[in-house]
Image (cartoon, rainbow, N blue to C red):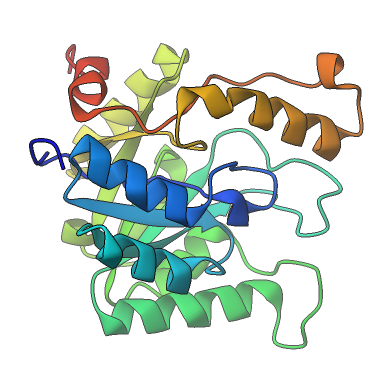
Length: 237
């Protein structure tokens, strides 16, 4: 392991995110150790499928595993359409009570009868099942809703993700964080392990959109960067 970093990536998706990530949990754990991260959170989109494998892989590499999940506005489990841009909540379990909260929340989100329709607003669900969780969001309105519902500010963070080209959205998020008296949480937007995996994201987009590879939407390359490169992304903050 290289020099240990105090930076902890919290918004990391694996191939368990069903089209939103391309790296396996084993690849992510090994790469985190190689880069010098002391801990890593797996926050796959709307599921906990990879958590057991992730915890085993992280412990094998001497990395502390953190359990999380990402909820998205307009998420469609049938993959008929993409989640709406912006508006995400990352929930991180700090203890066993937090893991129980994640399980209850996801069960309620999908409906107790196993229907495919996801029920309940994202922020409302997070507020109802906040016990033992750290709650991060890039949506100012959702953060305001969580505060209004009595969620402790110590549990909340305004999620400032990079790389991103939308500096106006960043400005609005920073203003909301100041107004609500909650901290900004700078973090990477990670969907692949190494930069060379970027074509896989393009392939996943083509499959999801049912379009030829060259016509599918392209997003920024979001790999697990070395700590020094990650810190440089936020040097202006």
